Structure formats: C-alpha cells, structure tokens
Image (cartoon, rainbow, N blue to C red; front, side):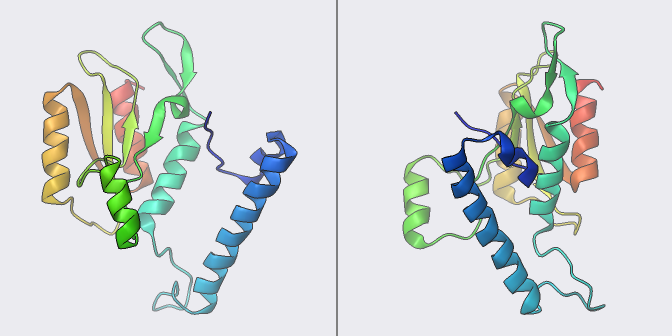
Length: 175
C-alpha cells in the first residue's frame, strides 16, 4: 500500500506509530531546508528566498492539484486524478553505490517524471517530463524516451512549471 503526504494535516489519518516516523522525517526535511536558508543557499540577488529546486516545487503543486481534482474514467465514473498519477523517481543526486543499485532495479536515463494511467481515445495514458519554469531544456535521452513512448500509445507531454503541466494534463483528459 502506498499513499502521498502533501500536507502535515493528512497525518491525522495515519496509524500512530507510522505517524511518528513520518513526522520525524518531515521534521528532518524542514530542518534541512531551514539550514539551507540559514546558509544563504536559497537567497537570490534580492535577498529574498528562492526555490533551489523549481521542478520539485512544480511537482509538489501538481500532485496536490491531482489529489484534489476529479476526471471521468472510461466507465464514466468520476475519479481522483491523483489516484492514477505516479512519479517516476529517476532523478536526483545519488552516491555511486545508490546509482548502481537503482540502475540494476531498472532506473533508465531519460525516463519521464510522471505517468498518468488514465486512457483517453487511442492513448493508454500520458507521460510527463516536468521542467522548472527556468526554461531548462529536455535532454536528448528524455526526448528519445518520449518519442518511443509516443509510438507505444502514450501521450508525451513536456511542461515548464506547474501551471503548464496542469493545463496540458487537463487538455489530455478533455477537461
């Protein structure tokens, strides 16, 4: 069983033992982000805090939106989009050992960030490569994978930032 925690308020519905573990992990993450801010690692030229990982922030917003938005399933029943949207955790800095382990488990270069398992028309689902609004371009590997998945019946999407990703998924879903 898996679930997404997008807000600490969701922890009230989790068993006490697991809730304590999740709270500890969230506390560590908050402390890490605070230490980055205190070290000046997230301050822009204006001195205001900025997001070091714009793609991560866009992804969090996308998941939060998907977890609160309904779309029709092929049966006509309304379902939460978030129940059918999965993040493919292929990116991020890793040690050489972690990278080798993950590669052995099937991590592939260029694989899209998200898969939406909701068919529409002739498409089995949508695959989304999410970029930050900073305009980063997709890599050759990412474009190659999206092209291969397109040939297999998945709708390829590249989006810069949350709003564009949301609009593209809505367009795919016919909303």
